[in-house]
Length: 236
Image: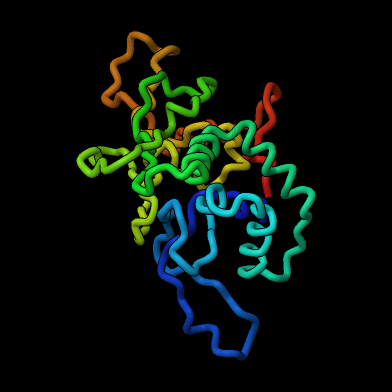
């Protein structure tokens, strides 16, 4: 519930509606592959803000807007407004993606140029290991003006009002922290094809591959450890 309130991305997929014929409880069924989408930074005129837009638009009423948006999708779930406020403070304090998007809010409130975007970096310059936490400038950049020629490679450009959704893939390091900000509270990278395959235990053995696969990354993240609290394992 609360993770969905603070998620930057929405769920996409082919929704099956044929089974909701009025003879039973309503069902939400996704057919085939589901995926995550990232919309524009500002809502269309007359539309209510949602997902990443809630970090930028009408932030004076942000907590109320989050609760209202979530209840419009699931009115049966109880929401604690005080807890929403506490999570908001935590996200603003520790989440590097949120910090960068808050810069967009500041830019808008200060009357800056209406032509702006955020660039999410698909590849980091630093060593992409678990304990090397990203900084605000390593995960994204605020771009002022027209930068259409910069949209290439693995980076994602999110515009102020593009009217379209960007599909995110599981091989992008920001795929998981954008959808699960409470499981990755410091914007820790998700899986990336650039994570090197370790040869520490067998330095003399020649390996055909140089990077890990997503199965190995997930196994590493869900491993139960005594030295850290497992957000993913203990979530529900």
